[in-house]
Amino acid sequence: MDTSKNRHIFFRTHISQIVQLTDEEFEQVLNCFTFRKYKKHQYITQQGEIGSHEHFVLKGIVKSSYTDPSGKEHILQLAMEEWWFSDINAFNNEQPATFNADCLEDTETYSISFENKEKLCAESKKMEYFFRKKYTSGNIALQKRVLALLSSSAGERYNQLLIQYPSLYKRVSKTIIAAYLGVSRETLSRLSSTG
Amino acid sequence: MDTSKNRHIFFRTHISQIVQLTDEEFEQVLNCFTFRKYKKHQYITQQGEIGSHEHFVLKGIVKSSYTDPSGKEHILQLAMEEWWFSDINAFNNEQPATFNADCLEDTETYSISFENKEKLCAESKKMEYFFRKKYTSGNIALQKRVLALLSSSAGERYNQLLIQYPSLYKRVSKTIIAAYLGVSRETLSRLSSTG
DNA sequence: TATTTTAATTGAGCTATATCACGGATTAAC
DNA sequence: GTTAATCCGTGATATAGCTCAATTAAAATA
Image (spheres, protein in one colour):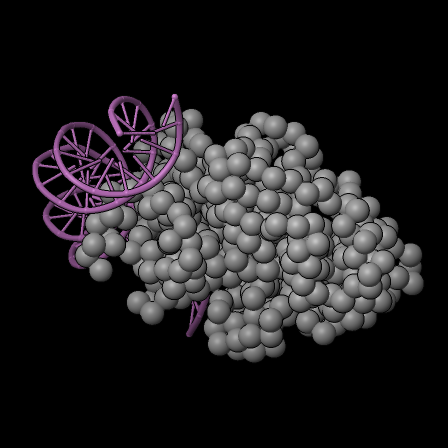
């Protein structure tokens, strides 16, 4: 996003898919967010940190992952342009983060603190509605993911991903796609060559 | 729930953990829900049906599952007293249900249609807040489940379940617990005997 | 451009979990 | 209270996917 004006338009267009805001209302929303820029490989949050934010991706890709005690990384979300992400538990219950969030490309976000979000929702019925709907879509996506993990093989999950997010495949390394699918790098490699 | 009065108290207590309603406001809420009774084994919704509801469990257990083309059943949720459940996508996007919901015990619910929920939220800021918070907890639970499916073995997931919901274990058959965990019945049996 | 780092492929053997199959033990149904 | 259905444990075998290891290919970085 080259200019602040373009960012505003991008964000406002996103919101307007769910609620229509007046110019004043949109100003009020913007005042609750901070614009942030991150370099590729830079961390947005790290496991254990407190005071995490909820983020709207303007540009770039963010990987939200958990590294288990054995050192293996498990990916919860890959958030691209127009996606929201947060460590939902840490954010909403003001707990230490359980996940890392780091950037796979140079990334720009609008980010909001818990207090600002609650204040905004308390003051703006439209925005409370907006966030309720956003969490609804989040739930739907997670239910689908649980179902895929329960019922589909690695190969099936891989094909589903290719169909659902073809752009991901081009922008993200296979190592990361493997961790997202819950398969080893080697197995994924064999799946993509076979078919 | 033996009497209508007891049901009201149970439901109101549940809501009051998040928002405080006046008597009039609670009346307004109740008017949007319908009380329903189901027998053990009875279906609440079936895959493909339209017009699904969101349900609050007053009594009993409901199994929310998907049966894949090969006939294998995968369990998304086991909802007990004070839990909410719905086929979130079907409910919110007014789509045909992807899941079955059936009762593992005689069950009683308060159920709400999509229109009534939206009407209630539009009229009551408190209830919009309540439902936003409920979907927040739902998201947290689903993120945890995804993480468990990605990072834990069958045995670890089994132990986590025993710790988190000890009562489930007593009320539900092992076949069903296995389907919830994403493990075969036989493997679960071996896990519980070994340790 | 050269050099280092990181990513992807491929092979060989291993392990967790699935499947199939049976019999005894509960539980439900008539 | 007898019969039918379902639940649960256990053995034998099969297999999807993992791990370890070595090799090549492709990006970063200097």
